[in-house]
Length: 369
Image 1 (spheres, rainbow, N blue to C red):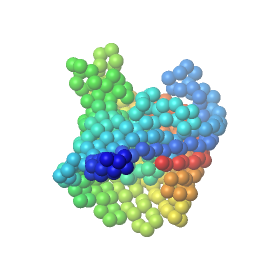
Image 2: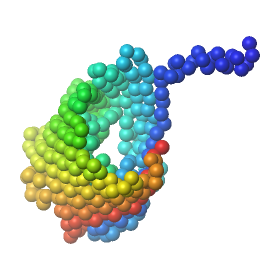
Image 3: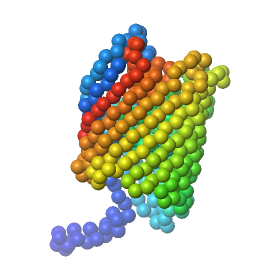
Image 4: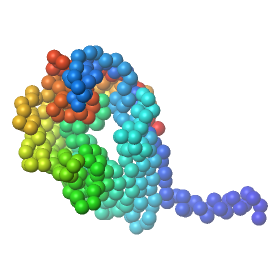
């Protein structure tokens, strides 16, 4: 048999198998030049905090999206069933270093099965249910630079050792997850200490025409004593809704939070609110305005002024893959994204001595592939 004929026969034989599977390489590269006012380079855990307030100008990775590359794949198993997987790496576009503590696939790494009628079950490192449920109700679409995401969702919004369920039934989506041990604050899974660093939650969402709404519960039991393995209980309940008309989408939400320590003492009790709007001014230009406010009732017995923040984004798309943007924010009674010595260390926008507000302005470019 001639070589060309052999190749044609082999190709024809393998075509049905290849047609049932797909693998996609994808990613985002996002970087910007940023100005920040009243900034302290000394962290709350370091001697000399808060340190002097200075202006800062520099390059920052991930203005609207965290830079990443990933591989996702599916295989058709027949009868409405699919196998699926995602491996997603996070990196700094300014220095090329790995993010998420140096993990190779620190953003996501999971495998699972999906049924057209029942839903999907996935296992591995992935986003928690509260993150997924509130994503469509975030004005900045979880814009990483100027959104208080850690305050809203908790530091465990991306978790290890997770089994997660998502099912869509018409306009209703149901979700739930269990984490056998997240390594954010502790050691993750530990033999003989089943509760340590566990987390769980559930959500119910509706989307019908221009209206959407969701309700979600989340609990995280972080290790608060490395010596004994004693855990706390960080609980959150959130409600959110949105309405879209023409080029405008408005949305808002409320999140109740209660963090308890190892002795059941209150570490944080707060009511977190947000509201915002997206306006597609032209086919290429999108505008976003968002307001965030945290009503802090108790921080381990201390009185803390309630922080608030306004964020504005102008995003211009040259194409479906490439856009340029201006993103700005003003925060009061905290650093940007509600970073203070008492609340959050997630974004490192620490206020300098004598300052009670901060301004951030960034101009950047984002490319998706």
